[in-house]
Length: 135
Length: 135
Length: 135
Length: 135
Image (cartoon, rainbow over all chains, first blue to last red; front, side, top):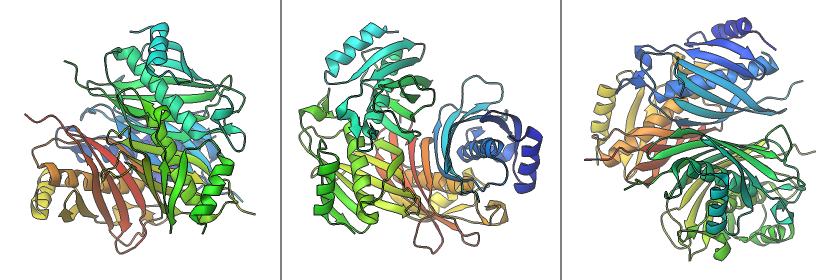
């Protein structure tokens, strides 16, 4: 299993433009933070949907890497998001991911997204990743 | 909030052919059981996909009714199921549902489905229900 | 590619209790019919959601078999259904499926479900199937 | 119904940072283009998943506005994406959207995403939007 520091280094080197960082990583779970600034907002004073989807995608990705290691070229195969509440424009987005299946070729995980500090989630995501066969 | 007994009576009177019963009901959550017999199986000795979807649909339905009462004509608007593991053909299906949003017009919930007694889920479902406006 | 007759024979022998039959099969597409009787209805005089999900599942399954042959043990990995309109209780359900990706290990297809003879769909489904590696 | 020019003006004024433009708009359908540059790529030389999700979200949004007018505050309630093929890093993303239900409170649409000029889609999306009650 990879540490939070290793995952953050990997994110920074592979996705230098990302605004996500890993806050915590555990057994088949991880928590990420997506910084929210002016660029992430949309009319109405809220975080745009694609930003939430990007946060969930990163949350799933680092949780899977934390579980299976950096060697793998995991690729998202599907993602379903339900938007639940209007996110605050003044708070970062926190994504809490847990894997519900880690198969040989397919991983399924879910992510709850929150405005930092809030109790009720702003969105819920289920995603599947395919894992290429290891030699 | 409705009791388990009230929900089971409602299920039996409204859906006389159902093989589901309510095992437990709590705050925005409920557990149901779907009896598994020969009719619910498919080739390969496992529970058919549509049976799992039906179990999840009932789990969502009774959890919502337990929350908002029997008067409402809640209707499923969407449902996403991920199949995770092969269910046992000898065990009932247990569905554990919790609601992640209870809005005025839309309710979102998730269901984990298990072969009775097993720790790992056989499927995971997210569903949305529309609630007709109350007069 | 398999014929409509071969697919119907396969359905009858493998799923003797199904109420679905294949109406048409083409290049990466197929049309099925799900008979609707008293057992398929729910309170309010409409076809139950699980019946629509079962019809979509069969539509995807036979379309995939028509494409890759009967030898394969295709298994549903995920399914998303959106319920669009109230189906008629007096009409069969027609499912029109087309495959949008046929990969080596994953097939993705969509299904539009209609009350027989109606122009507007009652539900829309996207499903993914995993194809076990062939020897 | 709104014209392509009206929709593009609206996009530019409301979402000044978007890289999407409307190519075509018709009866319950529209086509958009998402410019692809260095920022939209991810390791492996392909378009990142969140960019595809953003393109689909805009495609759904402008198609709905084209249908119901600019007054509405339509909000995405759910979105399911299936990734089908690796997009080209050298081609814009084209999104073709069509609405499959336009209800009073809920709109459902689907989007096929392509690398510009290619025949096979790189992703498929189904999304639902809620329409706030009009006074």
